[in-house]
Image (cartoon, rainbow, N blue to C red; front, side):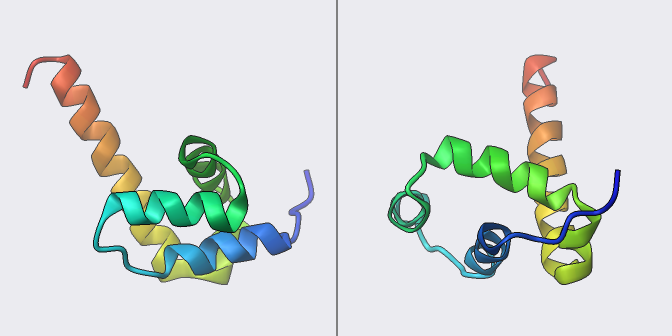
Length: 84
């Protein structure tokens, strides 16, 4: 499959993730207002986006940070399921 260029939405999502949020609720509200989708759907799309080499090429530091955060959360969930 040929690489697909980032869409305008993809670029907006990366720009959005460059911002810092003091409170999770504020970010979730901004997601709804900015993208007109639920926070759950936004994070599903973001997870797909950061898997793409085009996203890594567009902003390597951001995408690596987001991938690390995702991996950390996955490890924490797995540890909780196993009772650690």
